[in-house]
Image 1 (tube, helix red, strand yellow):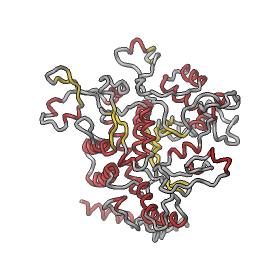
Image 2 (spheres, rainbow, N blue to C red; image 1 turned 180 degrees about the vertical axis):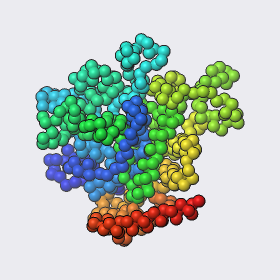
Image 3 (cartoon, rainbow, N blue to C red; image 1 turned 30 degrees about the vertical axis):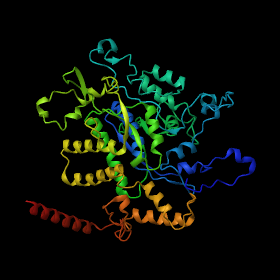
Image 4 (cartoon, rainbow, N blue to C red; image 1 turned 135 degrees about the vertical axis):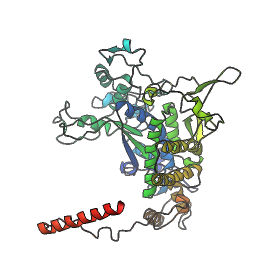
Length: 522
């Protein structure tokens, strides 16, 4: 809200129920928002669960970097992101489930949990529990924990300090999953989904669905639990020839940008981060309560350049050493600028997959598990000698895979954009839109985005997206190549029948051209 806040017009007897806010009375104010979502197919179920946890930590960070929702219902808001609006627009909890004082606690048998089970979050919110716990069996303990080569007594290996918020579950679903051999962490996650009622039911897809061979009923619940990340099991295959879809993790927090270039930059960046985490065996775990706090902070005005976020201090296990006064643990990244020969100290490391089994443990004690507040610039570019930053790690990964020059050049443009967003050198779309509105001649400093201002803003956004208007505050020196519809469909994909002689002549011309290229290349 701006200097002259306007309240909606209400009757005198309703004033006690009105607060200074933007009042939106339809679900579409939330679900009408756009976003950028990226789905990753993992190598196996274990990897999909591990990536789920790591991406959950990154979700608030990436939402702040991509913030683009400063205007709601014709009002300039005091927030930059869409997430909280959608969360409220689809929040179907009863007063008792919300824990409101004086709420009617009488059970309602038609609701899941009879409408009185305490539910702490909207169905559109951050995750409530990490789900990775490794493959579950150490080689030392395998003899006592395995029967006929199969694990028999898996326990939740995530430290309690990470899963530190209440996780209400549907007890019947949990017991069913545990009886079927599903480990506690994943059983808790699925049972947590089933505390909600289904929102969408399709005619002909209720009793007609065979739950032994189809997953429509599960997806009805799964697809209406909108969290910052979503874990997606493979759908059943109708036949051996059906396409194989594996274990997937969907990253859901990023906001839509004004240009294709920016959307590509953030999409590629989060893809590369997953490769960095897996290849370098990194650990981003922080308590979920801190992830929730980050999500709240990410909504704030200018959070990308001015905000502070909780982030893990040590993404890799600490190394044991001696500083002359006894044992000292330090980050392996502290050796990056060391004058010592790094190759001389190289030792044979266990595989990344083997080490990831222990990632949730973070066994170095309080320091190894520690986290602190960091600015976006520090998260992206590094802090001290113990935290290298996400962007330098991406560059290290590109060196590791011997990325080709042309690809590295384009990736450099993407990473440069993200770095400048983090430092505040470039504005987020939300910040630019806010400045546009506040600088418009028709703006009266009352938070009202009039039709005239909205029209001019939409024209500006269109011209930026199509490369017709260059805005240095958003893209720096980078200029988007103009996108023109002229000539896009000059050549029609014709399907008229062609005579045999014409086909042969076309093939003859193609063969001659191919031969010509071959000769020239030699």
